[in-house]
Image (tube, rainbow over all chains, first blue to last red; front, top):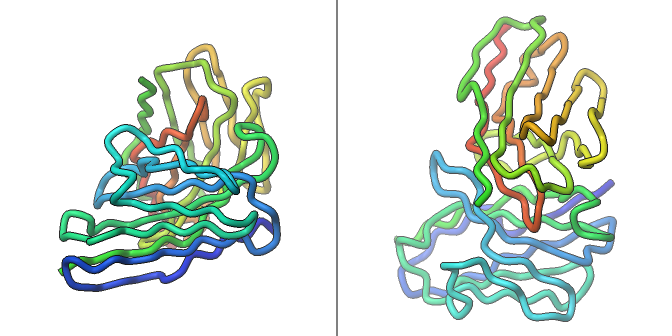
Length: 117
Length: 109
């Protein structure tokens, strides 16, 4: 149980392109989803937290107009990297949890490797 | 600001050994702590979740302990196997998960 599917697993595209990443909870309803970014040799850093039907809460330093998050249902959240540039190349991972935050584990997707040329 | 340190950064052992992975965190005001494994180029697999009121959790060959007041958690892996090779991450939760940089484990036959 508690499977999170993330798609696509890898994206290579030109600078200026917008890229959408999907995160789905397959066998549970995710009241809260999280988006993380991981640069090589570094730890995961939280980008934003999204609750179904609400606007996402972004961490300090993360541009909300650059990284658009939509959490329209209890099983799907999307992250759109708008007008991506080479410095946005990174490993993006989503996670999902159900129930009260902080008392239930977070379950992670397999991540999306984004490479901007 | 919460800071998480994991020691050792890397570990290479023959299979069969019992292992100890250490995690320390600076802010003890946490609700829980989660241990994950990450395979190269992959997402995270949740291993154990310890609530702040608990002292330890066990799952199979894995046992995690938590000493919240001293800001420490330890992951014990019994009878290690080559399939245990991965990076192990600890992440305490206060208002969000804060990750350490992990312990990269290699278990060789």
